[in-house]
Length: 122
Image 1 (cartoon, helix red, strand yellow):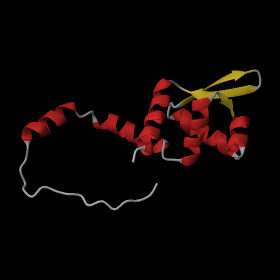
Image 2 (image 1 turned 90 degrees about the vertical axis):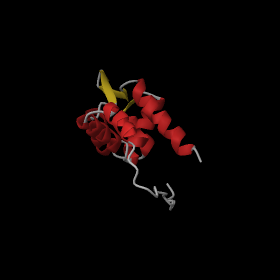
Image 3 (image 1 turned 60 degrees about the vertical axis):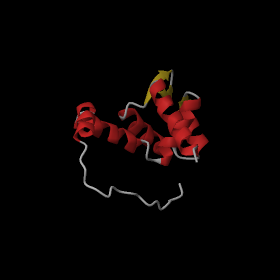
Image 4 (image 1 turned 135 degrees about the vertical axis):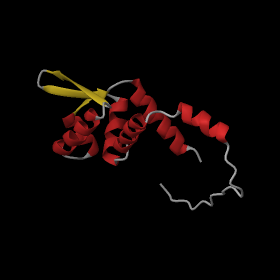
């Protein structure tokens, strides 16, 4: 992502709009919920995990296939899948000796899709 220096305008007066502050404060989620959300977004902050999520967005895959696709070791992929699973973004199922991974639900797909839409806007 290219860094842009943007001038941020600020108020020329110190007027406090208590009605707006109260309205927003009443709807503000609990700090614990916002902290959980921040942790979720941190998981999205790693390129390898994003690539894995993209792959799983397209198809259910096993560790071996993801490793080949991303040109990485199975160990590295397994480590990142563990992080994604702990964040409740991916799930797995075992079929014989093969373990397949997929996105946990459509919410993950929507988060991913919305992120791509937002980053492609200019």
